[in-house]
Image (tube, helix red, strand yellow):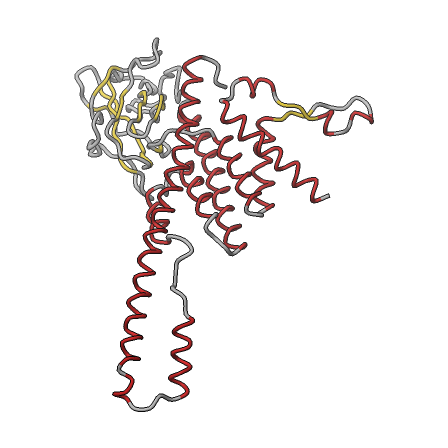
Length: 362
């Protein structure tokens, strides 16, 4: 939970970034749709001009038959083929944010508002729900990556220098990844590891990090290994100028006191996305509100359940007359105390909409 003043500031900034994404996607889709609409009207005007020109030259072709009159009537009644949504721009944005589940979910929520078909709206909102679930899984893998891999430096049972463990994640941003190389087991005989370097590459199926992957700034640079970091950034390596919204895998290599490579490169880490983690509770609230407004109750209930799980706690009723939800359910005070105002406002809207949906269903 966010407890310090700095944490509160970071939470407020992350909520602001969510809203910036919402307005970015909303304006991009509206602008692209406006341009597509103008292009469609111009195409229709050119077609109408050609039709009228042909009618003006009708005397060249002789008398006008009934089928000609029916064709002209159909041409007069045909409206301009105006698009309901900006398909090309949607595809571009989905490709740009394909690896960022936080932004992808917000984009899909905005895309659903342009769909007239109820099944298509529901399908898009289900994809937004899946993206937020993927964001939760990504956060769990990042928590695992931030845990020390081998804190005790146990001695290896073999005489060969073992490969170093996966580097420990310290933080990530949209353009930087900071990791700490972990000291691996020390061989029974031979030279102990003194230095380490980090190598990284863009994640791809079936490929691992090698000693040649040093194209990113900060990769391949040796730093002293520390068995126990006394400060957060002691013994860390920061890779900078990374491409945004891109999964990066990393691995470390160990060196002795003479900076000679010991063994080979270690195992590759889990993919680390170059993106700021955003508050999923806020995005679930936005999804619940959008699904309720677009009449997609299945997604609305799914998103509201996530909001309830984070902001509402249920007490065990002591008596039968206390089993009413009004007496059993209450806001989780620690969660509320450590939430940003925009989070609480969106959660309140999602909870009220869910209560209305439940009342209408009954």
